Length: 167
Image (cartoon, rainbow, N blue to C red):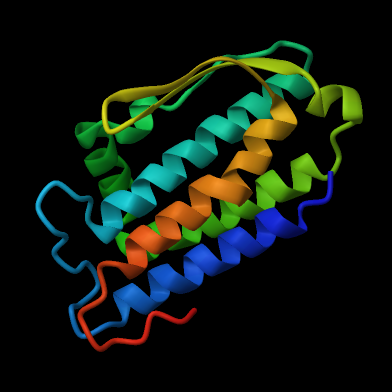
């Protein structure tokens, strides 16, 4: 699997996270009501990465593990991840290491492994988005094409007015 798009999506996300951390609003600007803070967004991504890495490793060992994103949206779990990682800077470091691991592993998977159907449950904002098998390659591509860019935009939306959002 060519992981160029995934690496680029992670780089763009981490650049946005660094921009937000260095903005006038401080390392974790206050989000609008009902939205996540920068640290919560990064914790969510770190949890998704861990879930994705677990799934990739399970497929590589021929023991498919379901992909379920519910814990990555749980507030208590997000707060625990923030604490365990040491805040925004630690989360950025964790995400960078996870990105290297995921891109490295994904680049070694065979076509058969990438085509392996993975039972998938995806929720967003408490609403069911998907409950069906998805090929492993589709889960990985979904990170690059949708999940990471969406959270990059979410991070940049936390910047105060007038602060350049270019990353």
